[in-house]
Length: 90
Image (spheres, one colour):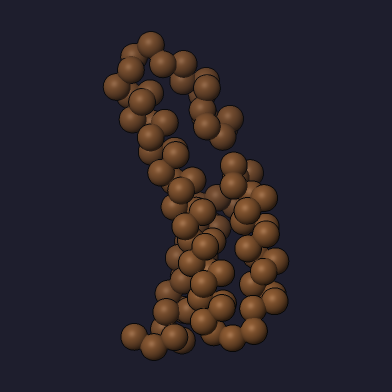
């Protein structure tokens, strides 16, 4: 795989995450905004890939938090379902 293919793959992942999270505010929004801004200042393909990778990691962390919350809500029947991590569920 060359840098161009890696870059395109990262863009595809971010597009999928953005489509899923488009309607809600992320708990990691400050970091996402920071790295999105840094993408404008990246001078070469390697720097851009690094910044895109950081964005992908943030989106994956957000998904991991949501999955953890769902499993806790499912396995602990006394868990308050109105206490979601992003405030949108329940």
